[in-house]
Amino acid sequence: MFTPSARLYRIDQVPDHFREQFIISGYRHPRSSLKQCMRSIFEPTNETANFWTHFLPAVVFMRELYVMSRELDFVRDPYTYPMLAYLLSTCLFPTTSSLAHILNTMSDRARHICFFVDYLGISVYSLGVAIAYRAYSFPESLLGTLFADVFLVVAGVNTVCALFMSCETRFMRTGVWQKVFRVAAFCVPYLFDSLPLAYHIVVADGGGGSLYLHKLQFVFAFAACALYTSHIPERFSPGRFDIVGHSHQLFHICSGVASYFQILGVKHDLKARRGHLVANRHVLSFGMSIALIGGATLLGLTVLWAYSNRLDRVMSAEKRRTQTTKKPAAMMDGKTDAEMTRRRIGDGKNTQH
Ligand SMILES: [Zn+2]
Image 1 (cartoon, helix red, strand yellow):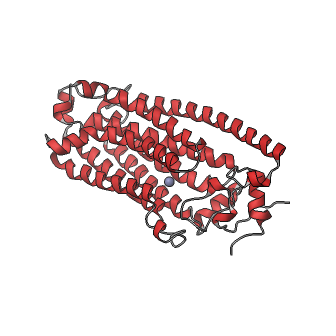
Image 2 (spheres, helix red, strand yellow):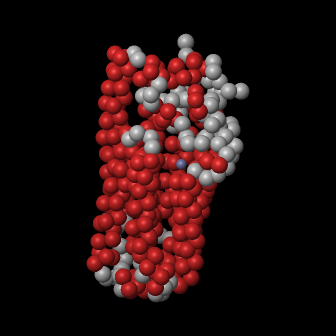
Image 3 (cartoon, rainbow, N blue to C red):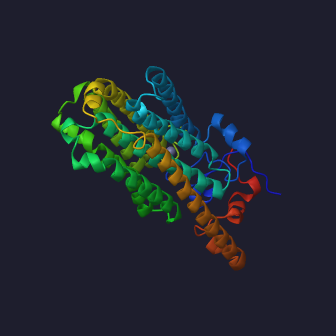
């Protein structure tokens, strides 16, 4: 009888889609129980720091939300609605990410679902950023233009497209194109959201004291993107950074720091520009802030439901195919399922100590 072990595995002992480039050891069992996953939060696996490097930012951002809720009137002051929508999305993405990193080894299906939810968090966050920028950080010279009018519409479309594209990559073969599409799914909305601020920084019209915070945010965001795509430092010494110091952890840290500077910059703009924006009727409505982020989240959940159904169909078809063909060579050729998992890790006997 196969019994999932809490011990760790090497890359050649886990199914293909559980493998991470240049990470050689520290893998958890691909069918861990919920209890084992939760216990691994405090054990040295190759996912432990991935959890903490987004869980701690989530706590910091939730604290920011709490502090802001005491400073601002999120219920009766419409000027603060975009800030609430933004902060909720900022709390969401590191929370879904940390949960995905700790729970993804419960099964093949759980792994896909976990990262679908992770992508939902990132996509909704991109819309939250757009709402905050449009409400508080838009350059003065762009307010009242067509670009300002369509900005949130395009950002909303980007959010949905990003979610579709990132979920779609989980059905693609592992390789360069999968990486390209996944990076594009996250980068295109971010770059679009950043257009007004990039313009702001270049032209510097009415930038005030928040510009250096936005610049710092850009520096850390681009560092995060570079780390995510380059797999530095582990590509230079595979196996050495398996537990601590690999690129995904550094990517999490940089993205967390970038978001923190972003919060500070938006907060500064909210306070510094309140009088001017309110006087000139540039306040976003409830519908273009809270309702928009809520609607996008619901739509995103619908997309995830559709993708989880598709996932079930694909996994069922894969299972039927492997049961009828029963060709070991084919099974070892990247077609992962529970049977293959059992073969690879040999009922928990071939474990690393
Ligand atoms: Zn991650």
